[in-house]
Structures are given as structure tokens and as C-alpha cells.
Amino acid sequence: MIEVVAAGPLTTVQDLGRPGLAHLGVGTSGAADQDSLRLANRLVGNPQGAACLEMTFGGFRARFSAAATIALTGAPCPLRLAGVAVDMTAPVPVGAGEELVIGTPTGGLRTYLAVRGGLAVPPVLGSRSTDVLAGLGPPIVTAGTRLPVGVPPRRLPPGVSVAPVPGLAAEPVLTVTLGPRTDWFRADAPAALCSAPYEVSPESTRVGIRLTGPLLERAIDAELPSEGMVTGALQVPPNGQPVLFLADHPVTGGYPVIGVVADADVALAAQARPGQRVRFRLAS
Amino acid sequence: MRFLPCGAAAVLVEVESLAEVVDLHAALRAQPPAGVIDLVPAARTLLLTYDVRRTSYPRVVDDVKGRDVGTAAAERGELVEIPVVYDGEDLPEVARHSGLDEREVVSRHQRPEYVVAFCGFSPGFAYIAGGDPALRVPRRASPRTRVPAGSVALADEFSGVYPRAAPGGWQLIGRTEAVLWDLDRDPPALLPPGTRVRFVERSG
Image (cartoon, rainbow over all chains, first blue to last red; front, side, top):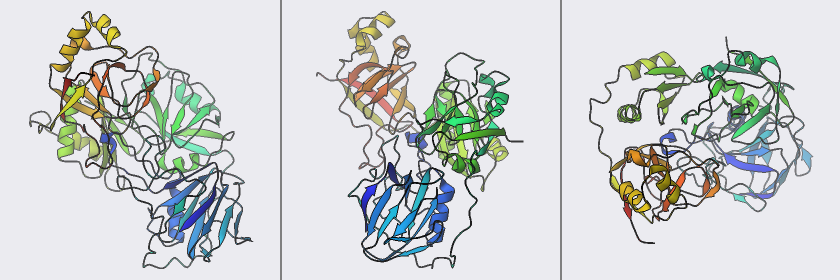
């Protein structure tokens, strides 16, 4: 059992989500930075989709009632276990009764905590992910939350002391494939999208990142009938400022999408903090 | 039928009518193309998301193009009756817009057998099609910040029921006690796509 002492600004349980239910109005959800979740799981020898904690801006403290193996990935935070500093991106043995204290990340936004055996909270519609928009899945983690740990898998954790990961870029470059509604925008809109950086606004959540930067002006003034949306889509409301859809985006939307950020770059976007800037480039 | 790439792992199919969407969705659900993860039908489009390790854009497009849609009769869905107390705040406005009195609006709303065209917006929210064209109304100029759960509402060619309280711009004509979304029920959605629907007046 993991007994949460402090939960930080936003901590939720996440796995790889619940794909395949969009026809019922249920989005996939899941970790905003799936690469980091998968790596954390691999470091403790879990199946890649085991349920972990996603912590936004760190600030998390918890006591482990039983011995465990954990790993932390994503936004690097100062980590102390039983008062001793431990490493990010490495399997860490935890003794029964020990307390983990996670500080504020020095860069990036979302940190993932995997425990060997996974978090064994009850799944909802086949997934343990919290969808903050739809209100599905486990409740948001707070002080006092008790998280059961599942049975450890039979396979041993890898014999890895630490996994090398590239540092987070100060100004990440995100590759965009234009479409499906590029023709709803002026011909110079794609160039405008790539002309200068966009700043991540504080009103950014698991639903999407609001960006301020070069205006993307419409060629067609009409209302778009709502249509299916994908993670990574750059949806542009009438104010011309794009929203980059993340894991909890709505299943359908009524504003045109000028382009979609490549899957591999969505994980980078999910680590961009308010005030940070991102750049776009077009896929060749 | 138009095919629009949507990132590297999805294709948006655009068609001419809602009936085409409904038929295409039924055909694809009955026999999903290999590697397809989600089908998201909407008023004039159907989005297919797929696993890039198992299939590709050209393969998905070819599969959809090769479908015999509409000739095969779609399987008739279950019939669900929605009891409605017709006392919605926008009922007078709907009456005014349609040039009918409120009793006539209520009577015409109950007359047809509807079909759930697709779901979206939130879990269990069904876009219910097949209503009297005289009752087509635009969304409200300013949406409400809170529409109560169970609200029965109209917008464009659709009737809808709000599964839970949410901001919304549809015109409210009544309320129901029917539970649209229940995680303890299998399936959790009362009105999945293809369900036939009748609205039946109840006194308040």
C-alpha cells in the first residue's frame, strides 16, 4: 500500500488509457507523456501499460507500507527516500515504512512514478486512467489516498542501474502534419504556424495546451460541424490561437484542425510548462 | 466521399449526408478493418484511428472505398423509450421559431421513431436523428454555463439528452429521469449508435 501524505498540484493514476470507446463519447485518456510512463514501467519490470502516478509539478510525498521497487521518469525532480537522495530514471528499492519525498521539477512538467506490480486501483472501462474531462476513472489523488500495489510480475526487473534519457529541450520543436482542415485557413497560415515560437499559457491542462503566438487566420467563416478529434491535433478557435490536444481531449470538436503534431512529439509537448515556448515545423 | 489524412494514424472520411455516416459506421462496426482502433462518426464525417504497426493510410482508405455501404440493411437496434416532462426553459423559443404552439411542438416531438446517429461531446451523449424538420432550431446564441443532468434538448437536426450537468448551447424542451450513462450497467451507455428511440410525455 502506498499512503499519500501530500499530492502536489495535480496527481492522477494513469496507464495507456481506454482506446476503442470513442463511439460512446469516451476518449482514450492515459498518460500525457506515454514514453515516460512506458520507460518507468520497464525499469521496474512491469508490463508497459501498468498503472502509474502522473505528477504535475511534483510536490508528492508518500509512505510505502511494504517493501517495493519504484522508478521515476519524465520531468526531473529532487528525490529523497528515507532522507537519502535517489536517482531519476533508475530502479530504486524501497524498504517497508520508508517515505518518498518528491520536490518540484527543475525542468519539464510531468513526472511518472511506477511501482513494481503496478497500482491496483479498480479499473473503469478497462483502464485505470483518470480522464479529468469526462470524469472517468480513479478519483484525483489527494493527501490520505491509499493506493494498493499489485502482485509483482514473474519476470525480473532489467539489470539496469540507470536509463540514459535525453535532457528536455528548452524550446522543443514539434513536427506537424498539415490537415485535415488546412483549407479552412488562409494560405499563409502554415507558414505563420512555423514563423515564430508559441508560448504555453497557464490555462493548459491534460485536455490541451493553449498556445499564444502567430495568429492563424481563417479563410472560411462558417461553423464547422463537430467531427472526430485526435491527440496532437492543433485546433484553432475563432481567436486564431491554437490549442494542442493532449490525452483528455474531447472526442469531437467544432473548430477546424490545421494540423496534427507527430505522436513522438506529443510526449515532448506534454512536458512543456506554462511560460515555456515551443516551435512548429512541417513534416516533409 | 473524401478522405483527409489526420496526422499519421487517422483518416477523416467526409460524406454528403448523415444517412451516409450512419450506414458507413454500421458497415465498419460490423466488420472493422484490420488495425483500426476507433470509429468516430459525426454529422458529416467518420474518423478512423488506426495502429500504424498493423496497417497504413492507403490500406484503410482502400478498405473503406471497397465497402458495400447502404445496400446491406443495418441491423435494427434496440428500442428505448425516453419519458419526458416537457417543461424546458426554451420551449417557448422553439415554438416561436417553428411557428407552432407549444402543445404542437410537444406532440410533434413524440411522433417519430428516432435513431441514434452517433455519440460524442461526453460519455453517453447521443445525437438522436429523425425528428420533424419543422422542429429544427439553431443552438442558443449564448450557451448556458450549466445544463442540468437529464435535460432533453434540440439543436440543428438532433435531439439530445444531457447525461450529466454540463455547459451547453442546445435548446431545452424538457427533462427525463432516464439514466443515460451508468458505469454499473453493461453497456454503460443507454443510447449507443443505432439505438431506436421514442420520446413519451409524462406529467411533471
